[in-house]
Length: 455
Image (tube, rainbow, N blue to C red; front, side):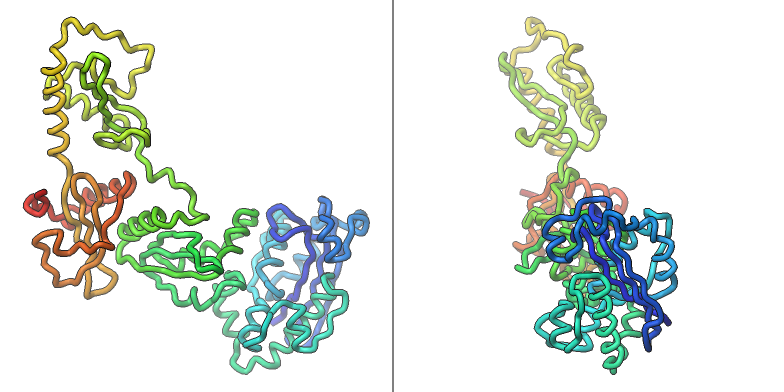
């Protein structure tokens, strides 16, 4: 078993928009060093002044240095089939993975992080930065913040870790490859405590504030996916750097996970959850009164400023309801506007042959009462988070009213018997649509008893 112990210097803190200025690779067989490689690299971009001050590597120094593509073959040969070791391993790995891929090499490797290993083998130290570790463990560093100087110090640290690894941390870590995909600032116990079941997961920052909420069929697998892959953009790096701890809530079913996610996002609006367009409907059936006093019906695109009589995902659904109301209640189609009618096709209304507003408005009122009387009301009973409970979803008058968990033996004679205050929610179109679609797919889980829903 051989290790490639690596250190790089870069123009910035994330791989997406930055390049390498220097690389050092030391091959170690677990007993001693067997090979070394070091090179300055022309990053094809100016080195920021504060980086020059930190590393001592100037633009003039790399002007005649090879580009990474020119040394990629040598780098790949040194890394190939060896365990990749670095201090804060994901940083170095992300840069090399990106640059090797650009050079035409499909490279992957097992990883060991000397930060994580040090925390386990040398616990309770004040700091695990390379400089502080070397100071506490009396490891000399020559040319700090230069690739070979830091790599040689990392080699000495790694040898000390191997000698003091009385609990077989290194071989155990190599078996638990998922651990190496987690950034070093995240508590790995949070990850290992995650269940492989449906639910939601919460990312919190150092202040314990929720910064992201997600849902998953398999919580552990979904959380891990955030830290895998080679997305090196600044946005993703900023997101990952903000995460300090991971929490979760199991849901029993995917539908409950979706509803829990929506409810919590609306309560907390975490900074890394985008404003979700899926929370809004596409179309609505609206009512207004014109200058002549006639109540008019209109199918239009969603407008958050206006309250719709009913919302729809597709315009055809809304137009179909409008046509049904016109046919069954004798509404005048000139006083009803379909979504597909373009403004230039609308004709001026001749009011002389219409019923008086009071008579016509009674017909509109009857049509809207019909719409209201046909709203959906039901309870969905499904599996819970364990064998001693079941989940419930209470849907009343086309709105999700509450959802939660009850004991398996609970008898439902009236929804108020099972609904707690914390189970109530302010629904939106997306949540309502999820429940209606689920009820249509699984009618056997739906209890529709009108006596439950009297008001």
